[in-house]
Length: 482
Image (cartoon, rainbow, N blue to C red; front, side):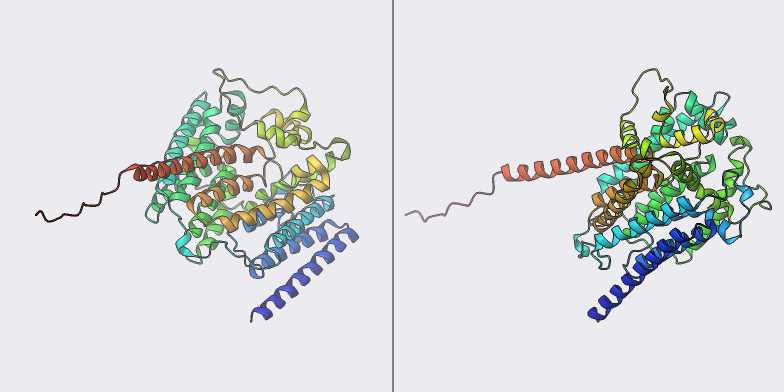
Protein backbone atom coordinates (compact mmCIF):
# COMPACT_ATOMS: atom_id res chain seq x y z
CA UNK A 1 0.00 0.00 0.00
CA UNK A 2 2.86 2.40 0.87
CA UNK A 3 4.64 1.75 -2.45
CA UNK A 4 1.41 2.29 -4.37
CA UNK A 5 0.75 5.57 -2.54
CA UNK A 6 4.29 6.79 -3.25
CA UNK A 7 3.86 5.90 -6.93
CA UNK A 8 0.58 7.85 -7.12
CA UNK A 9 2.19 10.86 -5.42
CA UNK A 10 5.02 10.78 -7.97
CA UNK A 11 2.46 10.65 -10.79
CA UNK A 12 0.65 13.67 -9.36
CA UNK A 13 3.92 15.60 -9.04
CA UNK A 14 4.74 14.89 -12.67
CA UNK A 15 1.21 15.89 -13.72
CA UNK A 16 1.41 19.15 -11.78
CA UNK A 17 4.81 19.89 -13.35
CA UNK A 18 3.34 19.35 -16.82
CA UNK A 19 0.43 21.69 -16.05
CA UNK A 20 2.91 24.33 -14.84
CA UNK A 21 5.03 24.09 -17.98
CA UNK A 22 1.99 24.24 -20.27
CA UNK A 23 0.72 27.30 -18.38
CA UNK A 24 4.06 29.11 -18.70
CA UNK A 25 4.27 28.24 -22.39
CA UNK A 26 0.74 29.55 -22.89
CA UNK A 27 1.48 32.80 -21.03
CA UNK A 28 4.54 33.51 -23.19
CA UNK A 29 2.77 32.50 -26.39
CA UNK A 30 -0.47 34.44 -25.88
CA UNK A 31 -0.49 38.06 -24.64
CA UNK A 32 -4.28 38.17 -24.32
CA UNK A 33 -5.17 39.55 -20.86
CA UNK A 34 -8.32 37.46 -20.43
CA UNK A 35 -6.53 34.25 -21.33
CA UNK A 36 -3.62 35.13 -19.03
CA UNK A 37 -5.98 35.81 -16.09
CA UNK A 38 -7.75 32.47 -16.50
CA UNK A 39 -4.42 30.63 -16.84
CA UNK A 40 -3.15 32.17 -13.60
CA UNK A 41 -6.41 31.21 -11.85
CA UNK A 42 -6.03 27.60 -13.03
CA UNK A 43 -2.45 27.50 -11.70
CA UNK A 44 -3.61 28.82 -8.31
CA UNK A 45 -6.44 26.31 -8.11
CA UNK A 46 -4.16 23.43 -9.18
CA UNK A 47 -1.57 24.39 -6.56
CA UNK A 48 -4.19 24.52 -3.80
CA UNK A 49 -5.68 21.16 -4.78
CA UNK A 50 -2.24 19.57 -5.15
CA UNK A 51 -1.01 20.87 -1.79
CA UNK A 52 -4.16 19.78 0.00
CA UNK A 53 -4.90 16.35 -1.43
CA UNK A 54 -1.45 15.15 -2.51
CA UNK A 55 0.88 16.79 0.02
CA UNK A 56 -1.64 16.71 2.86
CA UNK A 57 -1.52 20.40 3.86
CA UNK A 58 -4.79 21.55 5.40
CA UNK A 59 -6.29 24.82 4.26
CA UNK A 60 -5.60 26.44 7.66
CA UNK A 61 -1.86 25.71 7.69
CA UNK A 62 0.59 28.58 7.23
CA UNK A 63 1.66 27.79 3.62
CA UNK A 64 -1.94 27.32 2.51
CA UNK A 65 -3.19 30.46 4.24
CA UNK A 66 -0.50 32.48 2.52
CA UNK A 67 -1.19 30.93 -0.89
CA UNK A 68 -4.96 31.42 -0.54
CA UNK A 69 -4.64 35.09 0.42
CA UNK A 70 -1.95 35.70 -2.21
CA UNK A 71 -4.41 34.56 -4.86
CA UNK A 72 -7.39 36.40 -3.39
CA UNK A 73 -5.57 39.73 -2.97
CA UNK A 74 -4.11 39.66 -6.50
CA UNK A 75 -6.84 37.93 -8.52
CA UNK A 76 -9.99 38.98 -6.68
CA UNK A 77 -11.00 41.44 -9.39
CA UNK A 78 -9.07 40.12 -12.40
CA UNK A 79 -10.70 36.68 -12.57
CA UNK A 80 -14.35 37.87 -12.25
CA UNK A 81 -13.57 40.44 -14.95
CA UNK A 82 -12.01 37.79 -17.21
CA UNK A 83 -15.06 35.55 -16.74
CA UNK A 84 -17.32 38.46 -17.67
CA UNK A 85 -19.36 38.25 -14.48
CA UNK A 86 -18.36 41.55 -12.83
CA UNK A 87 -18.88 45.20 -13.75
CA UNK A 88 -15.44 46.76 -13.28
CA UNK A 89 -16.85 50.29 -13.16
CA UNK A 90 -17.41 49.63 -9.45
CA UNK A 91 -13.60 49.61 -9.05
CA UNK A 92 -12.42 52.80 -10.81
CA UNK A 93 -8.70 52.10 -10.26
CA UNK A 94 -8.78 48.92 -12.36
CA UNK A 95 -7.67 49.42 -15.98
CA UNK A 96 -8.54 46.32 -18.07
CA UNK A 97 -5.61 46.25 -20.50
CA UNK A 98 -1.87 45.68 -20.32
CA UNK A 99 -2.25 43.10 -17.54
CA UNK A 100 -0.20 40.22 -18.94
CA UNK A 101 3.09 41.23 -17.31
CA UNK A 102 1.56 41.37 -13.83
CA UNK A 103 -0.34 38.10 -14.35
CA UNK A 104 2.85 36.38 -15.48
CA UNK A 105 4.60 37.60 -12.33
CA UNK A 106 1.75 36.26 -10.16
CA UNK A 107 1.99 32.90 -11.92
CA UNK A 108 5.74 32.73 -11.34
CA UNK A 109 5.23 33.56 -7.67
CA UNK A 110 2.67 30.77 -7.21
CA UNK A 111 4.82 28.20 -9.01
CA UNK A 112 7.97 29.13 -7.08
CA UNK A 113 6.06 29.03 -3.81
CA UNK A 114 4.78 25.56 -4.71
CA UNK A 115 8.29 24.43 -5.63
CA UNK A 116 9.50 25.61 -2.22
CA UNK A 117 6.79 23.55 -0.50
CA UNK A 118 7.84 20.47 -2.46
CA UNK A 119 11.49 21.08 -1.57
CA UNK A 120 10.72 21.53 2.13
CA UNK A 121 8.68 18.32 2.22
CA UNK A 122 11.16 16.37 0.12
CA UNK A 123 8.37 15.28 -2.21
CA UNK A 124 6.66 13.47 0.67
CA UNK A 125 3.40 14.22 2.42
CA UNK A 126 3.17 16.75 5.23
CA UNK A 127 4.09 15.35 8.64
CA UNK A 128 4.25 16.93 12.08
CA UNK A 129 7.59 16.43 13.77
CA UNK A 130 5.91 15.84 17.14
CA UNK A 131 4.37 12.37 16.90
CA UNK A 132 3.37 11.75 20.49
CA UNK A 133 0.42 13.60 21.97
CA UNK A 134 2.04 13.42 25.39
CA UNK A 135 4.97 15.49 24.10
CA UNK A 136 2.71 18.44 23.37
CA UNK A 137 2.10 21.21 25.89
CA UNK A 138 -0.49 23.37 24.17
CA UNK A 139 -1.51 25.51 27.14
CA UNK A 140 0.65 27.64 29.37
CA UNK A 141 -0.79 29.83 32.17
CA UNK A 142 2.08 32.32 32.07
CA UNK A 143 1.78 32.91 28.31
CA UNK A 144 -1.99 33.29 28.68
CA UNK A 145 -1.71 35.79 31.56
CA UNK A 146 0.92 37.93 29.81
CA UNK A 147 -1.06 37.80 26.56
CA UNK A 148 -4.27 38.89 28.31
CA UNK A 149 -2.48 41.78 30.02
CA UNK A 150 -0.95 42.92 26.72
CA UNK A 151 -4.27 42.65 24.87
CA UNK A 152 -6.17 44.67 27.47
CA UNK A 153 -3.38 47.25 27.73
CA UNK A 154 -3.11 47.57 23.94
CA UNK A 155 -6.89 47.89 23.57
CA UNK A 156 -7.01 50.71 26.13
CA UNK A 157 -4.11 52.45 24.34
CA UNK A 158 -5.88 52.11 21.01
CA UNK A 159 -9.17 53.50 22.32
CA UNK A 160 -7.40 56.43 23.98
CA UNK A 161 -5.55 57.11 20.73
CA UNK A 162 -8.82 56.92 18.78
CA UNK A 163 -10.51 59.44 21.08
CA UNK A 164 -7.50 61.79 20.90
CA UNK A 165 -7.45 61.72 17.08
CA UNK A 166 -10.75 63.52 16.66
CA UNK A 167 -10.32 67.27 16.99
CA UNK A 168 -14.11 67.75 16.81
CA UNK A 169 -14.95 64.56 18.65
CA UNK A 170 -14.06 60.98 17.78
CA UNK A 171 -17.73 60.20 17.12
CA UNK A 172 -17.51 62.37 13.97
CA UNK A 173 -14.56 60.44 12.55
CA UNK A 174 -14.75 58.75 9.17
CA UNK A 175 -12.29 56.20 7.81
CA UNK A 176 -10.55 58.71 5.53
CA UNK A 177 -10.50 61.32 8.29
CA UNK A 178 -8.76 58.82 10.55
CA UNK A 179 -5.87 58.49 8.10
CA UNK A 180 -5.58 62.26 7.73
CA UNK A 181 -5.45 62.81 11.49
CA UNK A 182 -2.93 60.00 11.93
CA UNK A 183 -0.65 61.82 9.51
CA UNK A 184 -1.11 65.25 11.08
CA UNK A 185 -1.46 64.54 14.82
CA UNK A 186 0.23 62.28 17.37
CA UNK A 187 -0.82 58.72 16.38
CA UNK A 188 1.47 56.79 18.73
CA UNK A 189 -1.21 55.50 21.08
CA UNK A 190 -3.38 54.57 18.09
CA UNK A 191 -0.74 52.59 16.17
CA UNK A 192 1.15 51.17 19.15
CA UNK A 193 -2.06 50.07 20.81
CA UNK A 194 -3.04 48.16 17.69
CA UNK A 195 0.35 46.40 17.62
CA UNK A 196 0.38 45.57 21.35
CA UNK A 197 -3.19 44.24 21.24
CA UNK A 198 -2.36 41.97 18.29
CA UNK A 199 0.70 40.59 20.09
CA UNK A 200 -1.41 39.98 23.18
CA UNK A 201 -4.07 38.17 21.18
CA UNK A 202 -1.46 35.85 19.62
CA UNK A 203 0.01 35.01 23.04
CA UNK A 204 -3.42 34.57 24.63
CA UNK A 205 -4.71 32.03 22.14
CA UNK A 206 -1.39 30.15 22.15
CA UNK A 207 -1.33 29.81 25.95
CA UNK A 208 -5.04 29.33 26.62
CA UNK A 209 -6.41 26.13 28.08
CA UNK A 210 -9.66 24.65 26.83
CA UNK A 211 -11.65 26.63 29.41
CA UNK A 212 -9.68 29.84 28.82
CA UNK A 213 -10.41 29.71 25.10
CA UNK A 214 -13.79 31.30 25.90
CA UNK A 215 -11.97 34.39 27.15
CA UNK A 216 -9.86 34.36 23.98
CA UNK A 217 -13.00 34.25 21.85
CA UNK A 218 -14.33 37.28 23.75
CA UNK A 219 -11.09 39.16 23.04
CA UNK A 220 -11.27 38.16 19.37
CA UNK A 221 -14.91 39.25 19.09
CA UNK A 222 -14.09 42.66 20.58
CA UNK A 223 -11.10 43.08 18.23
CA UNK A 224 -13.02 41.97 15.15
CA UNK A 225 -16.18 44.04 15.75
CA UNK A 226 -14.25 47.18 16.74
CA UNK A 227 -11.84 47.21 13.82
CA UNK A 228 -14.36 46.01 11.27
CA UNK A 229 -16.85 48.69 12.30
CA UNK A 230 -14.15 51.38 12.15
CA UNK A 231 -13.36 50.24 8.59
CA UNK A 232 -10.04 48.46 9.26
CA UNK A 233 -11.10 45.19 7.70
CA UNK A 234 -7.71 43.59 7.05
CA UNK A 235 -6.50 43.65 10.71
CA UNK A 236 -9.91 42.41 11.86
CA UNK A 237 -10.12 39.46 9.47
CA UNK A 238 -6.44 38.50 9.83
CA UNK A 239 -6.64 38.37 13.63
CA UNK A 240 -9.81 36.27 13.56
CA UNK A 241 -8.23 33.94 11.00
CA UNK A 242 -5.17 33.52 13.23
CA UNK A 243 -7.27 32.63 16.27
CA UNK A 244 -9.23 30.09 14.22
CA UNK A 245 -6.04 28.45 12.91
CA UNK A 246 -4.37 28.29 16.35
CA UNK A 247 -7.54 26.97 18.00
CA UNK A 248 -7.72 24.22 15.38
CA UNK A 249 -4.15 23.20 16.21
CA UNK A 250 -5.18 22.96 19.85
CA UNK A 251 -7.93 20.49 18.98
CA UNK A 252 -10.95 22.80 18.73
CA UNK A 253 -13.37 21.77 15.99
CA UNK A 254 -16.26 23.64 14.39
CA UNK A 255 -19.11 22.34 12.21
CA UNK A 256 -18.17 21.78 8.57
CA UNK A 257 -20.66 24.44 7.47
CA UNK A 258 -19.12 27.16 9.67
CA UNK A 259 -16.39 28.33 7.20
CA UNK A 260 -18.89 28.54 4.33
CA UNK A 261 -21.41 30.56 6.37
CA UNK A 262 -18.62 32.84 7.59
CA UNK A 263 -17.39 33.37 4.02
CA UNK A 264 -20.90 34.23 2.84
CA UNK A 265 -21.33 36.77 5.64
CA UNK A 266 -18.00 38.39 4.77
CA UNK A 267 -18.98 38.60 1.08
CA UNK A 268 -21.82 40.86 2.19
CA UNK A 269 -20.10 42.64 5.08
CA UNK A 270 -16.88 43.67 3.29
CA UNK A 271 -18.51 45.87 0.60
CA UNK A 272 -21.09 47.12 3.12
CA UNK A 273 -18.37 48.39 5.45
CA UNK A 274 -16.69 50.11 2.50
CA UNK A 275 -19.82 52.26 2.21
CA UNK A 276 -20.60 52.96 5.85
CA UNK A 277 -17.01 53.63 6.97
CA UNK A 278 -17.07 56.96 5.12
CA UNK A 279 -19.94 58.07 7.38
CA UNK A 280 -19.29 59.58 10.84
CA UNK A 281 -19.18 56.98 13.62
CA UNK A 282 -22.36 58.21 15.29
CA UNK A 283 -24.33 58.06 12.03
CA UNK A 284 -23.36 54.61 10.79
CA UNK A 285 -26.03 52.02 10.30
CA UNK A 286 -25.75 48.40 9.24
CA UNK A 287 -29.13 48.71 7.53
CA UNK A 288 -27.44 50.20 4.47
CA UNK A 289 -29.31 49.25 1.32
CA UNK A 290 -27.85 46.25 -0.48
CA UNK A 291 -29.65 46.66 -3.79
CA UNK A 292 -26.64 48.38 -5.42
CA UNK A 293 -24.13 45.81 -4.13
CA UNK A 294 -22.88 42.71 -5.88
CA UNK A 295 -21.80 39.52 -4.16
CA UNK A 296 -18.48 39.97 -6.00
CA UNK A 297 -17.82 43.47 -4.68
CA UNK A 298 -15.97 41.98 -1.70
CA UNK A 299 -13.44 39.86 -3.63
CA UNK A 300 -13.04 42.62 -6.23
CA UNK A 301 -12.13 45.20 -3.61
CA UNK A 302 -9.91 42.79 -1.69
CA UNK A 303 -8.11 42.11 -4.99
CA UNK A 304 -6.76 45.65 -4.94
CA UNK A 305 -3.14 44.43 -4.63
CA UNK A 306 -3.17 43.88 -8.38
CA UNK A 307 -3.02 47.60 -9.18
CA UNK A 308 0.14 48.48 -7.16
CA UNK A 309 1.78 45.37 -8.60
CA UNK A 310 0.98 46.49 -12.16
CA UNK A 311 2.15 50.05 -11.49
CA UNK A 312 5.39 48.89 -9.83
CA UNK A 313 6.26 46.63 -12.75
CA UNK A 314 5.81 49.60 -15.09
CA UNK A 315 7.82 52.03 -12.95
CA UNK A 316 10.70 49.89 -11.67
CA UNK A 317 13.50 48.43 -13.79
CA UNK A 318 17.17 47.40 -13.48
CA UNK A 319 18.23 51.06 -13.35
CA UNK A 320 16.27 51.85 -10.19
CA UNK A 321 16.02 48.67 -8.10
CA UNK A 322 16.12 49.45 -4.37
CA UNK A 323 18.46 46.56 -3.44
CA UNK A 324 16.91 45.94 -0.03
CA UNK A 325 16.38 49.58 0.93
CA UNK A 326 12.65 49.14 1.61
CA UNK A 327 13.36 46.27 4.03
CA UNK A 328 15.99 48.31 5.88
CA UNK A 329 13.59 51.25 6.15
CA UNK A 330 10.89 48.96 7.50
CA UNK A 331 13.33 47.46 9.99
CA UNK A 332 14.18 50.92 11.32
CA UNK A 333 10.49 51.39 12.09
CA UNK A 334 10.76 48.75 14.82
CA UNK A 335 12.26 51.35 17.18
CA UNK A 336 9.52 53.27 19.00
CA UNK A 337 9.26 57.05 18.80
CA UNK A 338 9.93 58.17 22.39
CA UNK A 339 10.17 61.90 21.71
CA UNK A 340 8.19 63.98 24.20
CA UNK A 341 6.83 66.13 21.38
CA UNK A 342 5.69 64.30 18.27
CA UNK A 343 6.22 65.75 14.80
CA UNK A 344 5.09 64.34 11.49
CA UNK A 345 8.02 62.82 9.56
CA UNK A 346 9.26 65.01 6.72
CA UNK A 347 10.38 63.18 3.59
CA UNK A 348 12.19 65.34 1.05
CA UNK A 349 12.78 62.68 -1.59
CA UNK A 350 9.87 60.68 -2.96
CA UNK A 351 12.19 57.70 -3.39
CA UNK A 352 12.57 57.52 0.41
CA UNK A 353 8.85 56.92 0.96
CA UNK A 354 7.59 53.47 2.02
CA UNK A 355 6.53 51.43 -1.03
CA UNK A 356 2.79 51.92 -0.51
CA UNK A 357 3.16 55.69 -0.16
CA UNK A 358 5.64 55.84 -3.03
CA UNK A 359 3.36 54.19 -5.58
CA UNK A 360 0.40 56.31 -4.46
CA UNK A 361 2.41 59.54 -4.71
CA UNK A 362 3.45 58.74 -8.30
CA UNK A 363 0.24 57.22 -9.65
CA UNK A 364 -2.36 59.23 -7.71
CA UNK A 365 -0.82 62.44 -6.28
CA UNK A 366 -4.22 63.78 -5.19
CA UNK A 367 -4.86 60.71 -3.04
CA UNK A 368 -1.39 60.97 -1.52
CA UNK A 369 -1.84 64.64 -0.62
CA UNK A 370 -5.12 63.74 1.07
CA UNK A 371 -3.41 60.96 3.04
CA UNK A 372 -5.11 58.17 1.11
CA UNK A 373 -3.37 55.15 -0.38
CA UNK A 374 -3.74 52.04 -2.48
CA UNK A 375 -1.73 49.67 -0.28
CA UNK A 376 0.95 47.53 -1.83
CA UNK A 377 1.67 43.99 -2.97
CA UNK A 378 3.64 41.11 -1.48
CA UNK A 379 4.91 40.32 -4.98
CA UNK A 380 5.78 43.91 -5.88
CA UNK A 381 8.14 44.54 -2.95
CA UNK A 382 10.73 41.81 -3.68
CA UNK A 383 10.56 42.82 -7.36
CA UNK A 384 11.04 46.47 -6.40
CA UNK A 385 14.23 45.56 -4.54
CA UNK A 386 15.88 42.89 -6.71
CA UNK A 387 13.75 42.34 -9.79
CA UNK A 388 12.72 38.87 -10.93
CA UNK A 389 15.60 37.29 -8.98
CA UNK A 390 14.18 38.82 -5.80
CA UNK A 391 10.75 37.31 -6.47
CA UNK A 392 12.25 33.86 -7.07
CA UNK A 393 14.42 33.86 -3.94
CA UNK A 394 11.77 35.46 -1.73
CA UNK A 395 8.93 33.05 -2.49
CA UNK A 396 11.15 29.99 -2.49
CA UNK A 397 12.61 30.76 0.95
CA UNK A 398 9.28 31.98 2.32
CA UNK A 399 7.51 28.72 1.46
CA UNK A 400 10.27 26.68 3.12
CA UNK A 401 10.06 28.87 6.23
CA UNK A 402 6.28 28.48 6.46
CA UNK A 403 6.48 24.70 6.11
CA UNK A 404 9.13 24.52 8.86
CA UNK A 405 7.00 26.72 11.11
CA UNK A 406 4.03 24.45 10.48
CA UNK A 407 6.00 21.35 11.36
CA UNK A 408 7.10 22.89 14.68
CA UNK A 409 3.85 24.65 15.50
CA UNK A 410 2.24 22.12 17.87
CA UNK A 411 5.23 21.06 19.93
CA UNK A 412 4.43 23.54 22.74
CA UNK A 413 2.63 26.78 23.49
CA UNK A 414 5.88 28.63 22.80
CA UNK A 415 6.20 27.25 19.28
CA UNK A 416 2.49 27.88 18.71
CA UNK A 417 2.88 31.50 19.83
CA UNK A 418 5.92 31.91 17.59
CA UNK A 419 3.86 30.53 14.69
CA UNK A 420 1.12 33.12 15.28
CA UNK A 421 3.55 36.03 15.81
CA UNK A 422 5.30 35.33 12.49
CA UNK A 423 2.45 34.12 10.29
CA UNK A 424 0.00 36.89 11.19
CA UNK A 425 2.27 39.81 10.16
CA UNK A 426 3.43 37.87 7.10
CA UNK A 427 -0.18 37.61 5.93
CA UNK A 428 -0.46 41.40 6.22
CA UNK A 429 2.51 41.86 3.90
CA UNK A 430 0.56 40.30 1.02
CA UNK A 431 -1.47 43.51 0.79
CA UNK A 432 1.08 45.91 2.36
CA UNK A 433 4.83 46.39 2.60
CA UNK A 434 7.18 44.93 5.22
CA UNK A 435 6.55 47.74 7.70
CA UNK A 436 3.52 45.70 8.73
CA UNK A 437 5.73 42.70 9.54
CA UNK A 438 8.77 43.82 11.48
CA UNK A 439 7.24 45.76 14.37
CA UNK A 440 4.67 43.18 15.62
CA UNK A 441 6.96 40.23 14.85
CA UNK A 442 10.07 41.62 16.56
CA UNK A 443 8.32 42.96 19.66
CA UNK A 444 6.11 39.88 19.89
CA UNK A 445 9.06 37.48 19.75
CA UNK A 446 10.88 39.64 22.30
CA UNK A 447 7.94 39.34 24.71
CA UNK A 448 7.79 35.59 24.13
CA UNK A 449 11.53 35.30 24.76
CA UNK A 450 11.21 37.17 28.06
CA UNK A 451 8.41 34.83 29.16
CA UNK A 452 10.57 31.82 28.30
CA UNK A 453 13.60 33.24 30.13
CA UNK A 454 11.46 33.93 33.19
CA UNK A 455 10.07 30.39 33.19
CA UNK A 456 13.52 28.87 32.67
CA UNK A 457 15.01 30.99 35.46
CA UNK A 458 12.28 29.95 37.89
CA UNK A 459 12.79 26.30 36.95
CA UNK A 460 16.55 26.51 37.47
CA UNK A 461 16.15 28.29 40.81
CA UNK A 462 13.65 25.74 42.08
CA UNK A 463 15.92 22.87 41.05
CA UNK A 464 18.96 24.39 42.73
CA UNK A 465 16.84 25.15 45.77
CA UNK A 466 15.86 21.52 46.10
CA UNK A 467 19.48 20.43 45.56
CA UNK A 468 20.79 22.75 48.33
CA UNK A 469 18.40 21.44 50.95
CA UNK A 470 20.00 18.77 53.14
CA UNK A 471 18.47 15.38 52.68
CA UNK A 472 17.12 13.32 55.52
CA UNK A 473 19.92 11.83 57.60
CA UNK A 474 19.95 8.13 58.23
CA UNK A 475 19.16 7.14 61.76
CA UNK A 476 22.08 5.81 63.70
CA UNK A 477 21.74 2.17 64.71
CA UNK A 478 20.83 1.57 68.26
CA UNK A 479 22.93 -0.85 70.28
CA UNK A 480 21.84 -2.68 73.35
CA UNK A 481 23.50 -1.29 76.40
CA UNK A 482 25.22 -3.82 78.61
